[in-house]
Length: 455
Image (cartoon, rainbow, N blue to C red; front, side, top):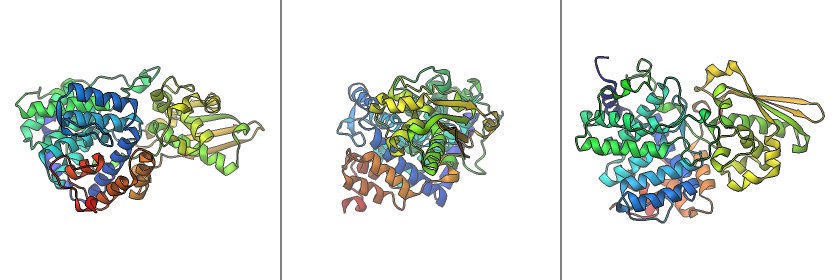
């Protein structure tokens, strides 16, 4: 290639400023910010977030920032971004992207908020940072060859871009930030290669944030990356990587989740629950459930008796059984106590996964499935789904996302704060300082509270 890919992506990231005011992009950025608040509220008291907070306070330096929905103050921008990313990722309820097969918001948004608030950037620059970080990260994720499905390594590039835009990096600096982020990204095995998902790291999104933000900060100091980083790693098929600003943005393929488990379980959950409700089945009537699905879903650890909270999030049999036994509301959020429920485990052990090769080409554009339930009396029932609710073709409304925030914040965040966040994000993208203030519960960045929040 005559032009190095990192340079082309840096140029594209800056050009995307022109897309910020487009109404569909404005709406989706707002929705990403609502969803980020919901995911962070849900995970703010998780063990992953608590350990990340202690690490950030002790090891990443002091500052004037506070973790979202937490009471830890005195964090610097990097520490706050890492903690907030950890909280967003903890329950696996954060946004994702159909093109990229994974999560971007939990890396891009905490970085843009922390460094945008620190720099006092406008709402327009903040929106540009979120849009460009998600867009470039999604394009890299879509170009992985073979598909890898561990979000941290390309979501971190998105974080480098969002940080760099908030720091006003020029094109050459942003190119260096991208190159550094590609080479310093976490190297995780894909979920399908791991027998158990017992660790807190999961897809490594917070570690992608660390490498991406660090890359942008170093690039601002003149630290150089290899200009052919993307070409040299062997991770990305540069011939499939879309470098043109024209056409439909990958950002538009963002999806949102209504359950705290892997996205690949969502369509099977809805299909199984539909059968049970439609046919009036009791759990004691169910003999066996078969989930026909694509190879990537089959390759997940899928432990019927999960060995950890994280493993439960990556198990189709467990997630479907939990929704049938406890109701779908038991998955918003999933609680660790459910891992010991003998009724859930007993049903999960009667759920079989069956590979449906004809569905393979439809992923990642969709997450199709067919669920078959056989009763002890010999009846069989079937339900098919082309994809999960919350995908671009089945998009959520603002009201649905605000409802998700209310549910995940219940018992953790004062209702008045939840209402204020909704009011702040009702019509336009706020400044990062106003957004941070709303989630932290105070004005800690030198900004007065927005007029909406001050009411």
